[in-house]
Image (cartoon, rainbow, N blue to C red; front, top):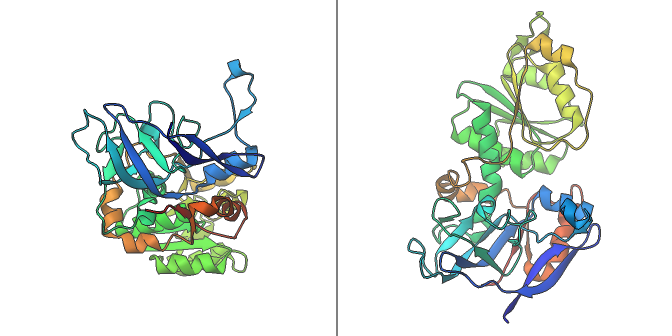
Length: 347
């Protein structure tokens, strides 16, 4: 039996690199040699939990999770009935299309492995092919950039609008790139870490605000001009707010700052619940829009990721070899230590 190494959750806050059976593709499958896989906040959540609860009929105890849902790699085996793909194709994967469960999120397979079985492999549904002009580490951004694009699509952002993005992590910066590629006139990024704000300017933000040092509403008024809520109270002229931070303070800041008819898109998972000032929402007729995942965007992003790969490459803060996977996850677990960690695999 051929084996391979795969990363799964271990004790709380730890990963284990284990030897597992190397999958064998069936007639409709392909086997992908993984060359890069990003670490996501969802991976970190599983680590904090020490796994995920098993189904109720199994007693509900925690079971290990095969990690990694942001893989990119090269096809090394092709099933007999697969006609659209061939050995040597470089692909990104849709983790939600696997019939045995979401890749890296409780399914049978995880992308943080030496090899990944893509079941019922179909171009445009389970995989997309990308050229060798795009490095594998940048290609692994395909999945999180689909999350960011769905957020922007949900926002309905128009070119003439003024937008602020809270949180300069990968999703916030990805949303910033998509907004500018969409032709949005003015995009401000808010964060508390100077290095992240510098990165935001590098990827195309028109201005940044350090909310630890500046009055956000006052700065937005300077940047976006004056507006007012339904009662005529002065507010910044910002049209659209995007919460890619998931902090209660962001929501409260938006409600207190929103002009009449402003919109707020929540794409970040809220870390803590907070009391919502419904009266403040009423006074601005603030529209709250939730954004989850990527119903259609998983491969809609791929052509622009290919075209603008050097711009998206700036989102990666750390590239760590698979041989040091435990260190990669330690970085991802440490607040402020890294922005986007990608684990790389030898050819």
